Image (cartoon, rainbow, N blue to C red; front, side, top):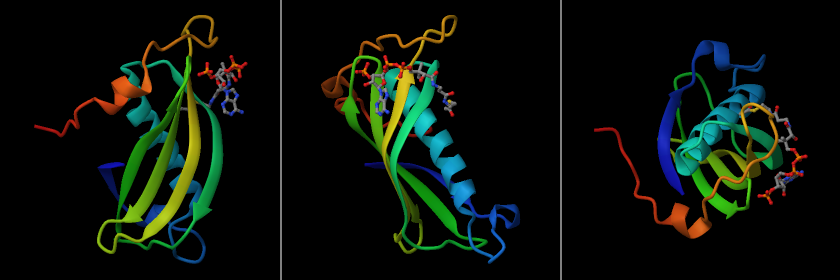
Length: 132
Ligand SMILES: CC(=O)SCCNC(=O)CCNC(=O)[C@H](O)C(C)(C)COP(=O)(O)OP(=O)(O)OC[C@H]1O[C@@H](n2cnc3c(N)ncnc32)[C@H](O)[C@@H]1OP(=O)(O)O
């Protein structure tokens, strides 16, 4: 699992109880997972098809830095299945784990599934890119 991205919990990310809103975490997971899947497959036309399981494990609060870990679980013909862990950067405690996040590669014109042409072995062999 690669922890490649971080976000700061801001006042407008909080719920009525003053902790990080679950809906905001899901929004961030969808975006972070899309970016990861698009970079791994080197493709832009991906849509979220399915999120299999979500577990909120601990709360986060204003001023916390959270980091996103992503890994490829399965690679199909048109789909890729990911796992995402959101954790507190400082304590390393998991905040949320989202499993079986499925993205489907589609034709941008017809919006129908199209083979992405990648295998799990190819994705596993990709180097970790960090900003220069
Ligand atoms: C980044 C974003 O937020 S995008 C916005 C939110 N998402 C969307 O708007 C997507 C809306 N959905 C759709 O347009 C359609 O459902 C499509 C085009 C994605 C897929 O259509 P389907 O008829 O399900 O396609 P199809 O049955 O061929 O399945 C495509 C792939 O998804 C997989 N799949 C389909 N349903 C599921 C499911 N419930 N769980 C896991 N995988 C699934 C299939 O196994 C297949 O994978 P493979 O080709 O790698 O073997």
